[in-house]
Length: 266
Image (tube, rainbow, N blue to C red; front, side, top):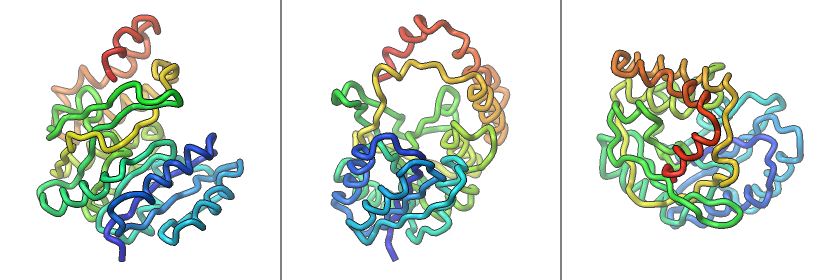
């Protein structure tokens, strides 16, 4: 059986070239003991046909599919259900993993049994190349969840046993745009801990002109619910209450001001 299962959810892929580059970055990893499970989450375009073509290039690629779109959290749970690896790694369909990523993460988890999660930092890019970086704290503590998630979901590798113990990705209305935040808070509430390798082992795609777009308020309310539940489960609700309302408050800030606030993020 493979040591690592890489999981990816895809829905109505808009750029097959980016998808192929993302998959190729996994196939070019220096670490080879893995399977790559890609779930077609009810796409209505030619995504499934493209995935089938891609799968012909390597026997380690496995495609699962269903007709109705269920959301990324459901797609990832479907991948998890058929996975065989003891480690579960994430990958998004428009991002790129650097060649040493899997090797370094496997080595870290092998040597550090006290951690259930290992993520990395990343270069931020778009069609014009690298334009920023995404950094995360080395040893996230509960307090690091107050402002944002201290992990970049697509860069993470997790122990499968601990991930299953945490229930995988919780499927609920409020987690549809923040399933990763919910997942990591659930794991921390159960006593598991994570680490971020302070090296950029991933290329994270954010289109520069789109990074300041306002999320619809309904998704901000969903995140508020996720924050409340997560802080409560981690027994830090009193400390976290001011941050519960953060996504809604930010959604009320004029766009021109928000751009100035976000300028220093990347």
